[in-house]
Length: 532
Ligand code: DQQ
Image (cartoon, rainbow, N blue to C red; front, side, top):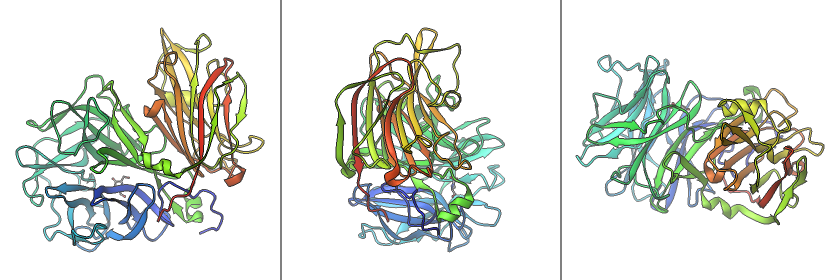
């Protein structure tokens, strides 16, 4: 690998080298967080997949252990793909994962158990002698190459365990349901828990309860009157994680999305983010979301730098009080890395103005900014609803508007030849106002063979009566942005050539004609976490 490494992260999870993808089997056991992940021990591109393993006391600093699951038997000889952990009664963790059994990538589900439950690090895992426990067959008409990624299992009041496996039939994506009394003998239910035509392969399904009136998390088996359910699927065709909120009918074992929300529009993250998975953190009574961010650079560049893939900052996740969407926020522990706070007094950011945020390490910083607008006359008009990502691609940070664009210029080089812009822009659509959040990568690097796609999302806030808040975690090649207090999240990967390390600068900008008020700017240089 090259010794030129300006894009390695300071506090986002990554191993010292090689390829990583999906987070697997996250859990909290005896005061220790466990993270497993898809890993290629042999190089910086996908292949030779094993489960690498790291542990943490705080979800910030991570210690590597030996690989937990690697190919060793007929039922996984060609790879150990994604899966999930389940806590059995009495606090005994087990893991279900997908084994690859031939060179065509035929898939089955396997079980592993810890060798020694008194080891809080759970270093060694033993494969069940009965593996594989779930296999496709001609009777269930499942194609062997579309049968993977078991979820955390949940226990019904009837004493049966249930688990989902991602699949498709033709182009109908589905979450196949299996049931078991003993976690070893599994039978396929007659119907999938849920399916949708035209959505293609469902990878890494996740199914979990959320409370309707509280941000507290729930164990995956909890159900009841105050409980709603979330089904997340990673759509292979789109490479995005979509979720549905709805009702789980335990008697019928089906999931009915809330009306109006059946469509695949709600996403955890409107940028680069995939194959995510949640777990219940019993220690702090919250549900935590982990996800994978791929590179936006070429495979040749990945090989040159010797690594590819990182994980997002773990996010607490809960149902917004409207019941219409989820909210995500970086786990509070990440704030331990904050140092040297910079706080601005309230100030007006005039139309056309650019203000530098000085006193921070701008390539490694956590920044929170809030804007207030007091009239919307100059909002640009839309005649019909437009896809937010298209809108952000058409109207980047350099496209002057009325109300906005205003926000942050990140990884900005001294003469602004390079910058990544994260900003708001307010539109009028009929009698309503729409707040758009964009992450514009088009000028992020002078090297143009990176993926420079712009990302966007509408944020469900009332621009006259609520603040427009943005928090961005900036980390050398990562821009992870939380708009509207976690109602819209956009992550991007960028590779500046000039704005690296201490050459990177941070600005607040307003490229609209209307003035806006900055009611808060707090920024912290971030210390380096101890990661692997
Ligand atoms: N990655 C795994 C699969 C999963 C995909 C293979 C999603 O199990 O479907 O590395 O990124």
